[in-house]
Image (cartoon, helix red, strand yellow):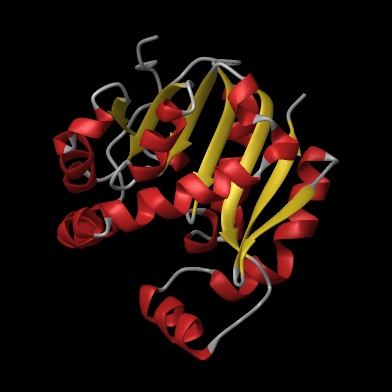
Length: 207
């Protein structure tokens, strides 16, 4: 499958430059992230992710999570707005079977409708405002066929996380207050699977 070219635009310059700058840090954390994602998705037996065929990783970063999905036997597509992140991801030999592309959520995911069995976004939704989150949900539903998954913060806060998220300038506090209601209102269903003390997977059925 080739990326759908219609609707693809340049990402927000400020955000893109930030992630371009920090991409080397993500590269150094690759092994740690890969190990963590392997544990998380092996423990998500109730979702039977390996029973599906295709998955899209939105905001893929270094590609560590996408790599885990290929190891599970899924045909994996991964998208990020940052060229720096994509360079890091593509440089890993473990990711040679992942199909990477550049794109921006607000411009529309660069794929046709019903392209993937699963669409997942890991630690993306808390960093964008409510309007952009609704755009994310809409696009996940549009290109997905079965499951839409957010892997992100739960409601368990810590001082260090709060300080870091204030510095990042995202929408962390509104996200943890409102995400459950947003997803239930949008998808009509929601299952929450705790993954760590301060994170979980929000799993919704598409269609």
